[in-house]
Structures are given as structure tokens and as C-alpha cells.
Image 1 (cartoon, rainbow, N blue to C red):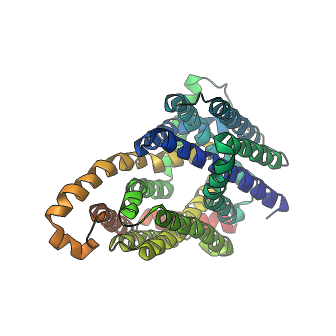
Image 2: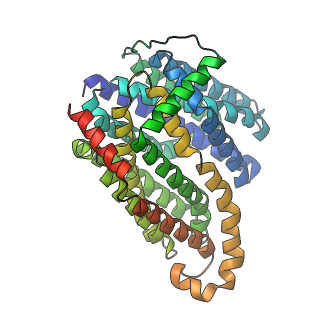
Image 3: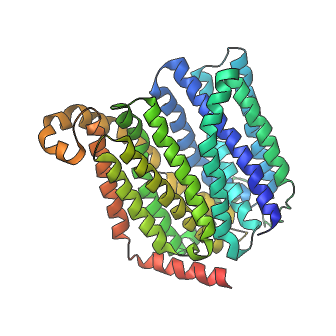
Length: 425
């Protein structure tokens, strides 16, 4: 790959780490201000829902305007929003209510940024490098996941929310500077941007995706999988905190961050072999489900860390294979909308999993498990949090079943051949 791609990787690693710091700090500020986890869940839910709804429109923009300019514009808008939050915080004017419109804006511009970014990434590399570049930028995200919370906590403890936001803005500007070294490919459009043509653009992308049976099958499987992983996002903290403290929770989350980084390194080293290898994605799905089961069978930090490592590595490799397939098959005129549809479909059920997990987990924890403790303790052990663990175990079993059912999916086999033919030419 070109050396400029590595410069782009470095710039985005710095920028994404700054963003991870600020979002971590905002989460801490919300909890310190309200004392309720539900307040943070509300903000995250708003961001997720708005992103799912508006995602396809970001794809339309990415296929109509120079992608580099769009990324810079979206980054600058997000930086301005963060500055406004910092201003409100330093003047003691920030409140949860005021954060809601910011959450709406973040939901719109963050998803538009990521959609355009994914399309732009396909523009700067050749077809045979798409899996390698996907793995490379997975490592950038992994580093941000690993360093962001630690760095954000350190800066927040000394300089508060405003200090973290200042660092975020500086890193954002650095990321924009590295993007400036690349040229945007000229986007040719036959019509002006208006409501009618946006509708036709989306319909065109929808019909394109319907014909891509392999990609459609893959993204629908991921949609169900992300629905199930939405449960774990809610269940993991109470399940761990029921038998240990925040240090234990932090240890498990750190193991996941390290696993993301390790998985991206593996993907980068094996990029040529992984390219178009959908069987590997299926095996990774099976490993992810088994890791969920392993993490639920007993109240053990050791088992949960193993779960985090296996789940993080397998998930990263799986996502790399999937991203490489999408970048290989899409071309310039459809890539933005196709990747936007991919994100929307893949994530549309996750908020539902988040919403269901809380009340269902509470029912199992406080009603069903205590009434059946003698038989269920053989499965998940005994003590507080084992009702949550029972649901965690069930999610793992269903997730394994999801990939077993699709083990010999003919559309995935066809997709694998299609990607290999494109990337080998």
C-alpha cells in the first residue's frame, strides 16, 4: 500500500482516540450529574436510533459530492458541537436536557461521517488491497477503544470535561490535516440534489443490493447478530458488578480492547488469505457465540476475560472479512449508498436488543432464577447476577445457532467466489 495510506491511518488513529476520550468523558459527566445509568442509556439510544434512520441519506451525499470534502465538513461540524458542549460545561450551563439535541446532531453527523469515510477508503486503495486496508483501519479503531477511556479518565480527573473536549478538537484538526494529502475522486451525477432525486438515489441503491444476494445474506445475518450483541451491552456490567467491583469490570473491558487490537494485527498479517474467505467469518461467529457461553457459566473474572479476548479477536477478524467484501464489490458510483444501507440494516435491530435486555434480564434475575435456583445453578452457578448470566448464556446459544444455520449458506459461498474473482484480477 502507499505510504500516504499509513499517514492517513496515523491521523485517524489520533483523531478517533480523541473522540473516544470525549465520549467517555461525557458518559462520566452524565453519570456523575444524574447518578443514573438510565440517563446515559437514553443518550446512547437517541444517537443509535437517529443514526439508523438518517444513515442512508449520508450515503446519498457520499455518492454526489467529493468524499474528502464531506469528511472534513462533517468533522468540523462535530468539532463545533463539542466546543459548544465544552462552553456550556465550563460555564456550568450544561444539563442532560441540553445534551439531547446534541445527541440528535451526533446521531446524524457521526453516521454520515462513517458512511462517507468507508466509501472514501475504497477510493484510495486498489481492489486487491481492500481487506488489508480494512484490517489496518480496524487497528486504528482498536487503539482508540483501548486508549480513549484511559486517556479520557486521566484528563477528566485533572481538567474536567472541557479539558477532554479541547484535546478532542485538537486531534480532530490533526486528522483533517492528514486527509488533506489525498485527492477526492470526481463524483459524476446526472441530476440536482432535491427530495425527489434523493428518493430515486435510495431506490437505486435498494435495487442494487437486492441483486447482490451474497452481500444481502451477510448483512441480514449481521443484523440478527448485532441484535443479540445488543443484549450483552446491557447485561455485562450488572453481571460483573454483582460479584466484583469496578476494577473487575475495567479489567474485562480492557481485555476486549486489547483483543480488538490483536484481532486487527492478525487480520493485517493474514489479509491476503482472509480476502473473500467467508468460511472464516462463519467460524469466527461460532467462536463468538462460544465465548458468550464461556463468560456466563460461572462468576469468574478469568472466564470473562477469556470471553472478551475470544469475542474481540473473532469479531474483529469477522468484520474485516465483511468490510473487504463490501469494498471489493461496490464501485465508485454506488459505494456510499451501499455502505450506508449496510450500516443501517446491520445496526437496525441492536437498539431493540438494548431495550429488551434490561427488563428481561431483571425478570430472570429477581423472579425466574430464584424460583428455579436448584436446577439453573448447574448451568450458570449460584449467587447474585446469575439471572443476568442465564440470559447471557441463552444469547450465546442462539448466536451459535445463527452461524450453524448459515454454515453452508449458498449465497455466502457465491459471495466468497465473487470477491476472490474481483480481487485477483
